[in-house]
Length: 441
Ligand code: F6P
Ligand code: MG
Image (tube, rainbow, N blue to C red):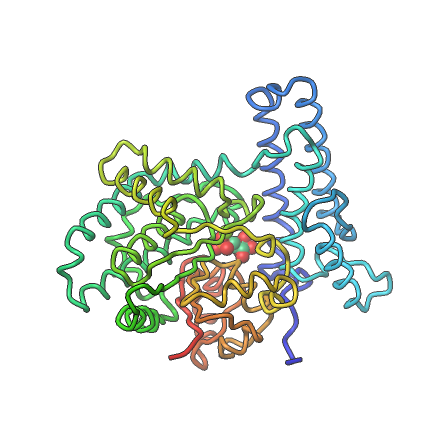
């Protein structure tokens, strides 16, 4: 086994992990409890007495969770039987086996940050599924939908841009096509600023014109491997036999505006024939506030289709058609909502790993995916990305992420230190972004 650095954790007082566990996650939990209160009459009372009781039960379970967190109580096993319960509880045992402390109990501030943050979202889900008949309620649905509605002008601008582009796509030369590809990649990157967990669940929509801001944002791209993506896909297109396929997989992150940017990119990949199939991976349960579930995916396409705008509706109708024709395929897998680092995928979810191996390119969207790719560990800034992946190489892959956690690898010697000296929050503010590729060059 390769030697890997320690995990980020709340033990480091003042670190972003520490502040997240101390302030941001309790804030998110409070917001969830408020949401349940607010939906009392409109949603729960519809289920009669049973609904009202269920709402009370969920609130009390969530309040208990908040108390456990704030008083740094031991992490307890999950109790409600669900598809992944045993895997979670085994993982907790494994974490406990790594502890030197005398009581052998994992605690919120002393366990790996990645584990406890994922655990918190899984416990929220447990509180909901323990409370039938409201066990299908998505506590983050409202925030996700609001993010989409508030981004309407930007969504229209992107849909219009895409439809104009498609009209003339066959007349574009290689360089023009590449420029357009790069534009849409950058839009998908900056779309990742719209995550709702960094803002503690508060609104974080896209109100400015991202298309016209790309030049100004370029200096904030710290690592830019877009050329590799172009070489790989344009090469696939040139060498592809008539009936064969080029599969791009997108491991999705946030719903709302970010998802629109990903679908616009996916649409372009088909229209430009850089890919013939796009596969999307979402979350099976509500996750990190804004992450995409199948419900969000279908809801958003429907909203775009009925958006009361010519080009928006055209996009929505095309997207629906791609799904029907199997050119776009949405997949679920419980692995994406487990706490494991991705290097554990071959052991924990061999079926998923085998599926990913069929991709010509995998795009991992967002910060949490980056943390899981690199194990959320205290790597030196200049460690090569390939090394930090720690054996996870299912297919050529690229991470498209704005930085929101104290982890970054693959920088030039001295680059991270320099940024740190001039701007201590450079890696947590979401202001910087990366395209970081691993695969054959
Ligand atoms: O750092 C803020 C945070 O909540 C992290 O805990 C998490 O990695 C990230 O935001 C989620 O961001 P994204 O939606 O880009 O994965
Ligand atoms: Mg997210």
